[in-house]
Image (cartoon, rainbow, N blue to C red; front, top):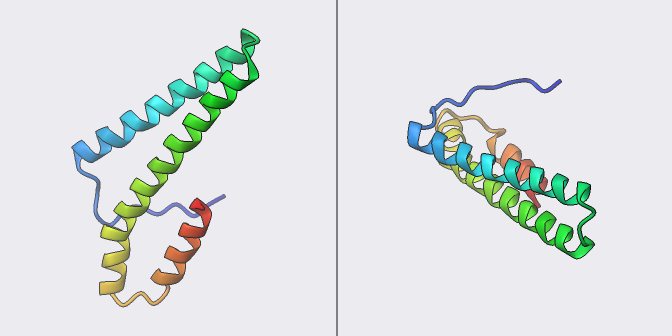
Length: 96
């Protein structure tokens, strides 16, 4: 189980809403792919939808990464946390 941390700087209500909306759209896309499989739809159409979800998820990840750099990482560096850059490098590698 992962160690759960809380953000030092909370997301604004608007930021939270935008992220939740993006996530809801991706969930809708995944449900759409499930329906496509149930309907035995053409493989090319399914793959097109898979690519769309992958792209949306990657964009979502980059938004979270930017937010992390602008808030948590900046604050950590200000407080002298020498491990922040290593964490950032690890996170960027995960998003590849």
